[in-house]
Amino acid sequence: NARGGVPPKPNKAGVMIGTSPTKLDRLVLEQSAYDSPRRYNATMVYHPGTVRKTKELYVSEYQRHVRITGLRPDTTYYYRCVTLREGGGALAKGLRPDVREDEDKDMKEEEEEEVELLRDQEKEEELRDGEEEDQRRRRTMSMRGTPDLAPPPAYELHYYSNNANRNLHMNPKQTEQYVEDQIALAEHKIEKGAMQPDAHPCFHTAPVSKAEPSVEPTPSPVKFAIIGDVAQTKPALDTLSHLNDNCDDIDATLLVGDIAYSGGIHDLWDSWFDMVDMYGRVFHHKPLMVAPGNHEPERDSQNNRIFVSYEARFRMPQVKPMTGGIYKHSVPKNLVPYPLPYDFGNAFYSFKYGPTHNIVLNSFGDFKPKSVQYKWLIDELNRVDRTVTPWLTVTIHCPIYNTFAWHRRDKQSVLARKYLEKVFYKYNVNFVLSGHLHAYMRTKPVYNNRSDKKGPVHIILGNGGRQANTPYFHEEPEEWLAVRDHTTYGYGTLEFVNNTHARYEWIQTDANDISTIKVEVSRNADGVPLRAKDMGIKDKLFIKNQLYL
Image (cartoon, rainbow, N blue to C red):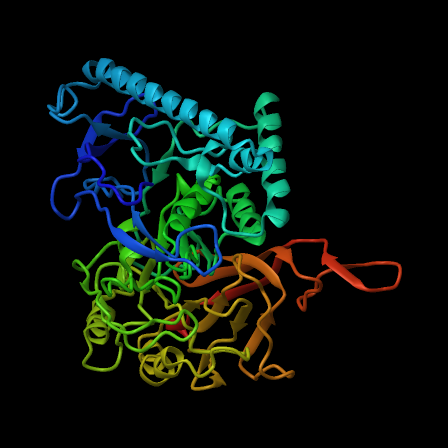
């Protein structure tokens, strides 16, 4: 990424797509202002005493979003991302794929020459620096350079992608050896034929919903992975690695907010995407649906803009483009003011997938009655046809139910309990998925602070990577609580087996010194607990759809 300069005009981008990896016979290009490349400027402010300037201008890479319509349900599509040189040419004129091959070859050769030139320049800089440790760090932490999980081959020219300078935002002593070992292991597996590079990225479209309830499994059960509060840490790598290795039956991933933890240092967004690119089996092949968390506003003190990076880097199924986005006061990360002026765009939206209707809400925008978001929510709930999508989920970053000591009086949670809980109960919402607390919690079906078999199950999954250390509010668990833990890391899976039953599981991927969930704990000679040694499924629930109770 460049700072302080203006990138050249971007080439036209598109996606070549088809139902066979050897026959990508459809080219879909950016077509409108809605699809046009997004780039943004930001002023990054650093703490005094750092090696970088106190203020520094960040100019993002171009963020490309291409809409593809006319896809058949329950079908696998293979794809390749491409860009066109200025002026068009054969590819832009839509000629047959075999005619495009020569131009593709030319573009690839040009890209390879540019990459080789960048490598030569980097080597010269490293020699001038003469810092062996810095060279090793650049080599091992360049996320896009990992052999097994690098992004798929593409003919997109990355004008400002000097990835060798990107480091994961974590303690180097904690993570460098870990990442180095992962790369070495991947190289060994590829050499032995046990792993193949991601040469044919693809995705599978959602199945058609069944219109009638049935206790028999549908032909295509739907299964989501759910992660939250990820950041860029060793536990985050453990979580994503485990998900990547066990994603064959995952249809989509829901990220319930707090994504990169950039703190306004926007090149950390770049390194976060480099990190997830390591795990291509899940992130190159499965949809990723995101919700805004309290670390996404990132107000720019120079122009008062908020949620700029979150809006530029993701494109959810928007109701319409974002409105608002300007806030003149400070936005502390741990106590975000309510409400922030941010509606539509990626703030709140919905999507259907098989037998599920999924609503994503913005904890930090106004959701009081008569607000834009509240009116949209009620309209959306009234449009849900439970004969077609019998399962209904809500994702909202700040939880309504909270067994932990922190964030209990946040306005976002207090007002959600006041205004939204009764709405969720009225419309028979099945699951409410949240993050915010760096811990894990699952309630029983609950309403109005009491167990209620027709109430939603509330789940906090804020331990995808951030330090899991949130203390409990009460030593004794609340009556409505099913499971809680504040020392482990992991992710959840939610499988909608048929129209009447769903299976939820929580998978532990890492732990602090001791876990409160039933996990074997290693002890030293003095009996002191060490790191939990066995990971895997630690909480599970098989539940009947509350709609039919």
